[in-house]
Length: 343
Image (cartoon, rainbow, N blue to C red; front, side):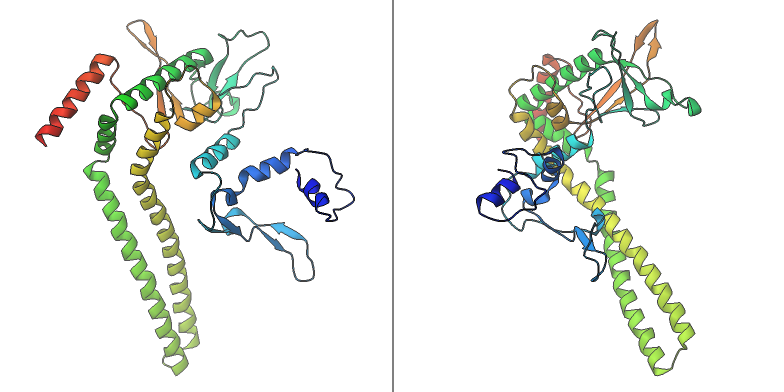
């Protein structure tokens, strides 16, 4: 039942302009439901405010002003599914004038300039004619990039084949995959994480020191040791420094969380792979579940032949380098076993 139907069923009055239509959910209401964080167990407060105590008109607050309290109640949707829905809604597959849609919407980017690749099609195009092109190349006022053209059917074949290889590789040689992911987290990256944690502790210590300093200059001002003008100058400087430091703390904390999350992302990716026995064809939900983005390089001519590279970044794990055939997979696994024995 819709809210109006439900209210009427329990005898609650509804506005006269809200006409009951059985089981009719309009698009804005469905979109609103899909965005609600309450379904993943969080409570969100301060979404709206009123103009004043005299004017009860509600105004929607910007998202950065919301207060989100996590895990306050039992979730009915897992967070991974909810995040996937948000990603799908951000990259809406709008139909072209021909009625065709691209399943790669929001995933394709130019490797050189970072712009999106546009889906180019026509009523007269057969499926093998549809292609993608760098958006920056189409901008005639600033042609700062090359076309980076790639055919839709070629891209589908390449992505599907790579996805099949990745799924097969991870399912058969999970230990090797995990080891390679951990090896990518080099000593430099680990040291960088340690440096971030030290910087965070140092910044937090300085914020606490500024609180003490502000208290001291306040007491000196009250006792007459420093003038009001001097107090205002010092207190303003302390407040500005403290505000900047708190912003740094927020940024560093986010970076540390992202670095710590990498190991969890590997486990999440493996769980996704285990849900599929075989991927026979591409679909938008599969693409967005597995793939973060695809970078398309410009074509190159080598020894009279054209080559074009694409980089497929998988969610949480980035580019996955896998052996190109079954024999190499087996050899890589044997090397892993030998290293494990000697370790």
